[in-house]
Image 1 (cartoon, rainbow, N blue to C red):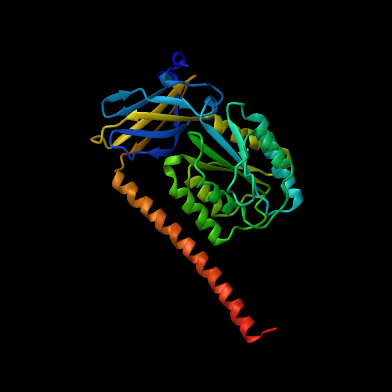
Image 2 (tube, rainbow, N blue to C red):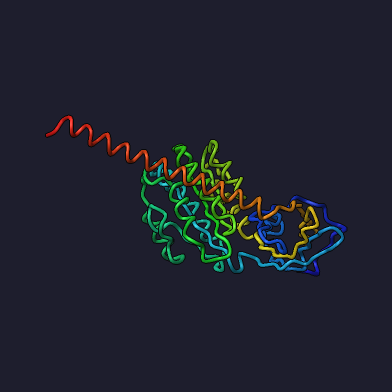
Length: 310
């Protein structure tokens, strides 16, 4: 695609950057999500440039949809059977849209500890999906995040009608889990079916670099799945050397008369380490709170039993 660049005739658009890894003092790795007009085109290194001070760098570029992308479909099981049918319809549409080069999985068990092996197993699991209140969808995703991805990048696609509101514990667990693994490049996209979901889940999704797509009714499911599909196909992993002396780096893509760019500020490993430590502490507090609740419940039951023996 390198020969199609024509920066002088392209209007500059914003470029989405996520999974930015500046933990190394000499190199940066990130995921660039190109504009929708370029999503279906296989771009290469000639279409990307990195500007640092007076230097222009050609990054190492990998189109994740060609190799290295793992998509995990997660329908919300805490809703009514009719809503689950809508979620499954959107899931199946997305399975058919994504190319064979993309691994498409789903949670193989409700707890989130196991992922299906391949597309065939994914389709079988989705076909047998039934409603369940526990564990919640958000808790299952949070647990699954701790299973290391076998690819360069994993994207969860949460499909929900937002009939039930997640508990504060589920919200905190999901947010803390995402914060634990920034270097594993895990992201959550979301398809809202029907009414728009209330905060904070959409906010958590966007903060982690994901997108929120709304399908107001059943007729919009295919369009919503297509939007998510294009966003997944638009992802490129970029790796390039960096100079700590420069305070900012501008990443640019230019092809087919479309140009987009974004600027990132330099951050030190020390700052990232503090953020990681903060995430560790937050998750530890959540786990301790759950243990205290369980112990208190057991103690209450035992106390009641001792006072009123059979």
